[in-house]
Length: 268
Image (cartoon, rainbow, N blue to C red):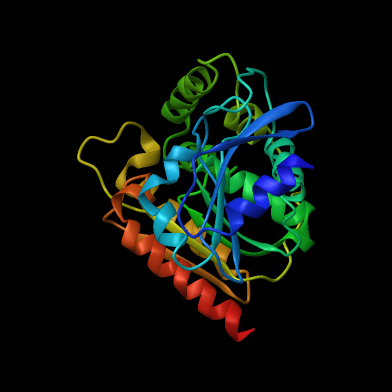
């Protein structure tokens, strides 16, 4: 098939090529492959973000591994559709994309923001396709719990605005996906793999809402320390130097933690 030949060519070069399009089910996905090496990496962008979100670290990661970045449906140059998808839907798309790209070995999944929710569902649903997680300020089903714990009445008003903002584009990810579900469903467990979470706990003088207050930042850091700490090979890195876009604010930190994951995998 012509797509397979294109993939073979893309994988043979260490310099990034121009983004390509590939059919996955009923959709066209924009993707790009660069780098080479025994490890393969899939980059999962944040909500409403395309593959360009990884510009600050894409070429750096490609110096050490074969790296794939793509735009989820509705983003970038992928199929322009507006309807609600869950993180489970996106995880299924990612799994199918890897198969279409003839990626047969498990990948290191690097995810940002809402992409972290996709990554967690992917790791739980497709354990043979992932061998490590690196998540950058990932979204959590407990985001709204933090807001409510600080000030229930004020928090509920702010959450109502979060819902409106999330659905402003005619579709919703975070809110309908998990923020609105209480009690929370039983999320499937992820197998014991190396896991690193880099979370921003940077304080701001004028926080946009309770989530970004000093107390909210403290609780946010504790949340991810607890989650990552549940993994025998888990690690949480809290940074006060970055905002939400850690790959843009501290690309060196992201690359450094990525290389530490590689070292850990090579020792296993």
